[in-house]
Amino acid sequence: MLIPLRVNGRTAIAISLFLLLSPSFSCSAQTSNKAGDHRAAQFEAARAFDHVKRLVALGPHPSGSDSIKKAQEYIETELKSYGLKVTQDSFNAETPRGTVAMKNIIAELRGEKPDVVLITGHYDTKLQSGFVGANDGGSSAAAVLETARVLSKTTPKYTIWFVLFDGEEAVVDWNEMDGKDNTYGSRHLASKLSADGTLSQIKALVLFDMIGDKELDIKREGESTPWLVDAIWRSAHALGYQKYFLNSEQNISDDHLPFKDAGIPVVDLIDFNYGPQHSYWHTNLDTLDKISGESIKMVGDAVIRALPEIFKHLDSPVRPPVKPVAP
Image (cartoon, rainbow, N blue to C red; front, side, top):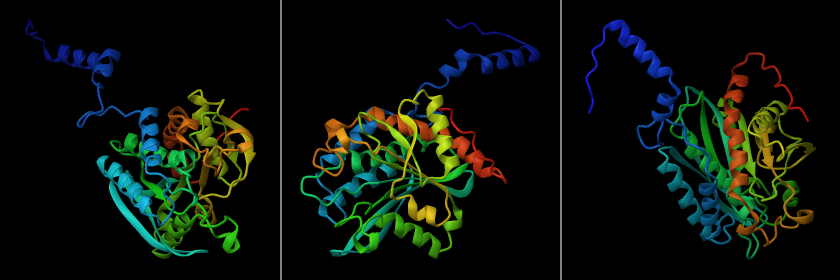
């Protein structure tokens, strides 16, 4: 039975302060992530893996195929279910095999500022019979979706666009068309934003690509902006993931480069060591059994934790370099 407690004003204030500062009160006030609750959601490995599983179940879904339309529908439905505003960026790409209809998918999370940070990945698979792209396509799409879910009930300092690029994979070969048979979606969006005058709002881009490998080892990508790389590596180390975020470097041509070329700070998070001697990449061995939701989670966790540092760096008028991570 509850007994009414009579207190004077001074005592009431003291009790209120005690309750607010009490650890047990803080924990009990944050009991779930349902509507109306303010506890931050957590990146869930199982959810990320399920996204990959559902995309793989669609079979090969290269750009312009009937099956990619099902992938687009799945991705858009998920993003809308998080309460985000979803925009279709449809375009026709000129490829070595003619015109191919493609579509970038963009979901907006309004922040305190109108300036935008992009969190991106691609969802198309290589045009190859039997290629389902669990890691190359599936893991990056899953990371964007789960990061969007986690952040969707927050109000970040900067507006965030969650972007799923179409047309990352070559239609024939990466080097065809003078090296332009690739990254159709990212090149289109960077060009479109430049043409309509909104590119100046884009302050940074984070790219997920091939981050589902069970044997995760991500090197620093040499074309990426050093301070952005450092911010995410610092975050990964703080989370205890330093074993998976290496300090060696490699250069990768990927969806971040059109934005780098436009003067935007970028970072490409990619594990380009997939299978023995990289033997699973762009083969039909890129299947669900080779990937782990835990790997996707570690990369997603590192990015989410790094966002306040990234925002702080963008706020700085001088933007001093982030202190490098110790080897």
